[in-house]
Length: 136
Image (cartoon, rainbow, N blue to C red; front, side, top):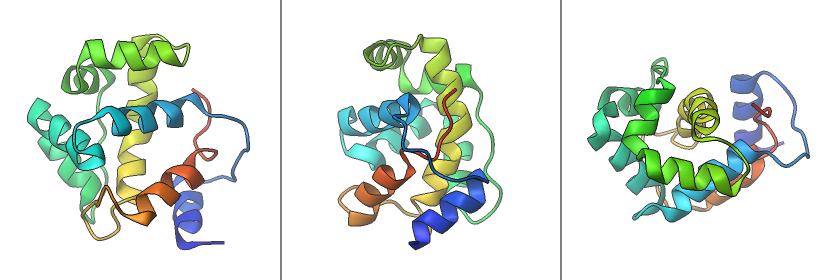
C-alpha cells in the first residue's frame, strides 16, 4: 500500500471501491478543463473568493469547509453545470459533492503545501482516489 493510499484511508476512514465514482470524474474533468490544470483550478477558486479555504487545504492545519453555493460561484455556475451534466448530475448535486470532497482531495495531493500539475503524484493520486470517495 502506497503513502497516498494510506493518507486516503486515514482521511476518508474507509476502504476503496472499484465502482466508478462520478464525483471523482467531475474533479478530474474540472482539473483537465481548467487552464493550468490543478494549479489553475486552485487559482480560480482563490480569485473567486475562496482564498482562505484553499490556503487551509494546502496548509498543515485543519481543512476549512466550503459551502456548495460558494464553490459553485467560484468555479462558475455554467462551468459546473456543464461538467455535472456530462456525468448525469445536477449542478447543485455536483457542487454539494465537490464541497464535501475537494478539501480532502487537495489536502492529500499537496503534502508539502504545493501542487505540481505535471507531477506523477497528481496523476497517480487522482487514479487511486477515484474509488475512495463514496457516491453522493
